[in-house]
Amino acid sequence: MAKQDTNEAPAKKPNKVIPIILGILLLGGAIFGVKEYIYYSKHVDTDDAQVDGDISPVVARVGGYVDSIYFEDNQHVTKDQVLVKIDPRDYKVKLEQALSAQVGAGASANVSQSQISSTASNSAVAKAGVVSAQARLDKVSKDYERFANLVKDGSITQQQFDQAKSDLEVAQANLNAAKDQYRAALQQVGTTRDQLKVSTTGVNQRQVDVDYAKLQLSYTDVKAPASGVASKKNVQLGQLVQAGQTLFSIVNDNSIYVTANFKETQLEKIKNGLKVNIEVDAYPDLKVEGTVYNFSPATGAKFSLLPPDNATGNFVKVVQRVPVKIKINANKDVLDKLRPGMSVNVSVITQD
Image (cartoon, rainbow, N blue to C red; front, side, top):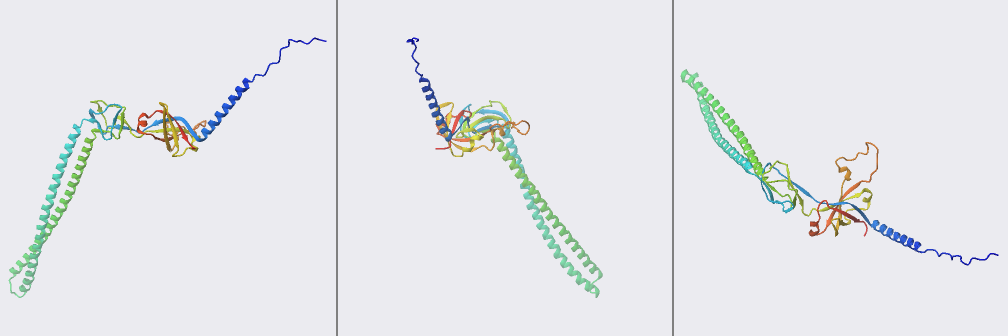
């Protein structure tokens, strides 16, 4: 019988560290997963967002040489503040020309008005002439009728009757002439009234020219369209600017908001009025709150310079993004720190 080896090594005990570590990792992963599930069940997040604002480009409405500049780049300005002045001398001359033409048109209208008074007086005289000629004709007609009866019984001579007949013809001719003169006088009154209308139209036109010249002159003072910070100054003293040329831009006060581009699959839970948490990359410790304000009527791709046309070739479905405007609920100190173009992360709270 073989002798038992008394030097055999004892059996190793199982290592319990690895199962413990795996258990801790699984527990931690489960806790993390549950927390993420709970979070995303109540929030919709995106990092495709940035600060936006209303930027007003200021353009020259009239051309000319820049006479004065009253602001510096990145300076705060107020609405209707004169920031650039264009040399106004040419426009002052045009205004003086318009005013002179207006005076001439007014004088022409006064002359036409005087002519109306004069022709009206002439027509009254002509009308009186018609009345007088009619009365003369009536008298001569009665004399002619009497002489016609008297000549039959020989009470008057043939010469007297011929004279009465001649007087009747002359009276009738005088009446016709008086009527023609009266009609001519009335036509002259009508013509003069038409001339007055033309003159009045000329006066109105000259007034329009004066108003336009004044408006053009006022445009030589380039004013701020809104209160804000002037930037991108693109004008220098003595520079010749053209009408429609952009001189600078103004980032309007109280116009800062956030544009967040959410995936179309995220929009189901997002509604107007929901609370939003905003984290600004430039200020990590700055906590800003906002509210969902409205949605873009189309995806960002549709507003691009060359929108995709899925009907022209192979189709690859791509999740589109829809811009959502978020109104910032913050005081002026916070808004002053934000600049259009800054990157932000937004989280829409869909459930309290």
